[in-house]
Length: 364
Image 1 (cartoon, rainbow, N blue to C red):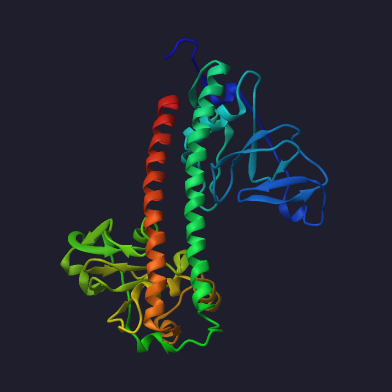
Image 2 (cartoon, rainbow, N blue to C red):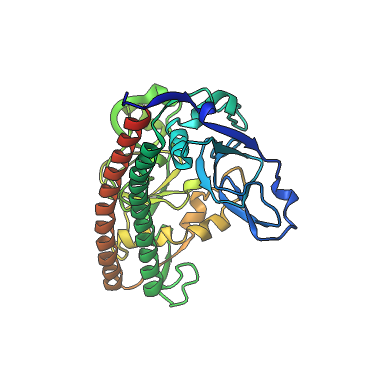
């Protein structure tokens, strides 16, 4: 350990305080002071709990263990915990130290996860002198800023792609520009996916099995690999599709995801497959058009535990079909955007690896 550094427990470098603010109790209150919840700003009220900046931790429910710094003259809902550094300890250093602990691993409770200061407060961390704490914070802030900037760039490029689509084609549901339309079942074959159950019995073969999670990272057009594979026997309980097919997530929080697969494989029951797609519609145009209809699809999905668009609903959807030359022009623009996103994504990954490495160096 470096000279002047000490090992201290979290409870030795900061104090905790609780909030009794319930969101439904402040709905009719107005004022100048913000209240924050697990998802961010809630509303302004006419009081505040803390008159200086502080750390807040989500202690209950979704997002449990998330750590953020909050401004002076503000408050937290009761599902969050105030953390106040003691004298001689940097607020930002304490926040990074808490993030290094992966506080969600301290959660207990199956229905509503909960973490307790009495548990994670016993965790030891290395603590340098205050001047060095501030240097470490400056370095980690710089890396965090780079990461957030690159994430924002990706969001802006996604927004640009959507803006280009709407400028060229209008709303694909309302079709105010009067493009030709056909029901999806008239331009391709639509198949429902399936999952071989019990899943453990069929894992371990060489046939790619495409789960929803495979499409939540990386390229937003093509899917080139899967995390899991199944044995041939499992094909009897799923849907085998060929390279070039378009798959569409038709249920749950991922509803609206679409990818073109670049390999033969089978699909999870959260997917629909669009195969044998007509040459009158470009696959990438088709994919993006479906993506931009996601709010509509969610609005018409039958009620249930999760939104779920069945095969019949999707077959009957009226898909706009502009002239192919215009579709191709749009696809050229989208592919250019995707190249930019690919470079940023690679750079983002490198920045995240460096950030994790430096966090490990200072705290682990």
